[in-house]
Length: 238
Image (cartoon, rainbow, N blue to C red; front, top):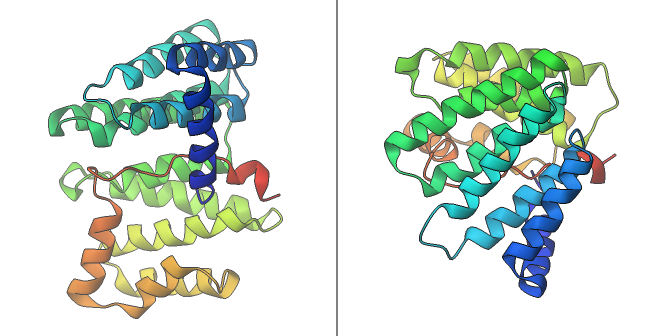
């Protein structure tokens, strides 16, 4: 999320100091010791992204996916383990080919759904809802994304406001736009800007029209671009 740059920089220093294999083993041990610890799983995934940046293969991503697959097999009721498992698939998407990207995205949705089945949460609803928006409309999944994001909005409205809650307004408005409901999209972005007046993402959407707005939203859901999957904001912005 918004603090991903800091998380990746810290993870990068750890990887550089210890070497990947040793660091991966240490991080995996920490996650295995506390499988439902969202932060431990996030730290591991951020380290994987840093370590894999200069690779010409997908070995490190595959290792992370295999690790989380075993983790959820060993701990099937750990909701956050399933959530990080889904993110591990998402982390690999921009480095994979087009056909593989579809498979990875579908696997990620399955993991996010399992996490929500075990324990409904704002981050789970937002994550799955936002993930649905990456699918072309021909797959008819946008409506499911909107449903999740509407539930996430209800949940956050019943809680103290957090900086990361702005993302729900951005994505929900994007979902309405993708369903050709521009008035509802604009209303959602305006509601979000009223609650989060410093949001550049909301201001940009409200400032653009027509082809310019389409380009902005299309670029936001380009599967070839890395999605910010750091969850650090969940514990740094309390």
